[in-house]
Length: 212
Length: 184
Ligand SMILES: [Zn+2]
Image (cartoon, rainbow over all chains, first blue to last red; front, side, top):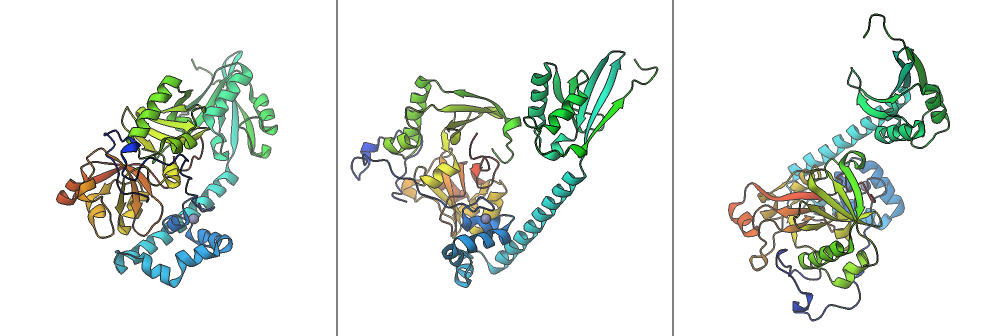
């Protein structure tokens, strides 16, 4: 901190009023802060993240001096600061719990992705009119709003993100474009990237008799 | 403010800022932050256009080359982003929280007075006391770099005297969903 003399934000602070004379003509160079490649925090905050084990591995490998600084026996005892030992133990337990939780979540996300399916449904509105609904794109990390926009400009037709009866997100495109969408997925067009074609199902929903 | 923030849902639009408005913002930032004009010029060169990213609930983010540098709520004070403060730590007055408060802060909770007035905390001395509503950078006990940007909910002398309730509300903090976005 070069100076503790801070001005209240409402009062204008002409720099020339500073007691240490006129400001230097050169801009002050920025502080270069190292960020952890694992959790994105400055490494001193890794202990509060949800990937401490991996963070430690990374810093030990890439910045051994900092590893010493943050995780040596001395550092561990001094950083406790004004916190009671009991509170520190609790904090460490929390961190371990958080880490386990994050790992379980990542696992579940991967499993979900593997088990996920994209369903493209051709729905008959009346004799000659259809709409196409698409389910499950979000499981593959596709932004539904962007996908809908892409469909609507590609097919020059209406496409919107809505929720179906079960409350799942779906994209509804006006017209029968089911096979065109399959082709787009195979070609990984625009935002439709990383969806294995064998996870894509095309089904047809006939209009039930006696409907409106 | 940015505990939950997703560009697709929370950004209403991006527009380049008119140069007359840019001049007004530059003047306001120079008066509100403790920053030299030439340093601000290095961060946000006059030739470069500032882009106004309009978000829900009257939150504005201003970017240079896509990088968020300024945050504003309604027509309130201008706050630097946390990444900007890491580069220029002296531009806002500082407060500090004790180690026990860090994990609450990282969960997005407002900072209660005891976490600021305890031995591990830090408030400016009486002759540099801050009023309510002042933008501050939040440091943490034993840590070199700031952990968040906040705004005082009461004067710092009142925090000492009353020593309960919320002392500093968070604007943005390490690990929130704005932190995750290096560019918009
Ligand atoms: Zn880390």
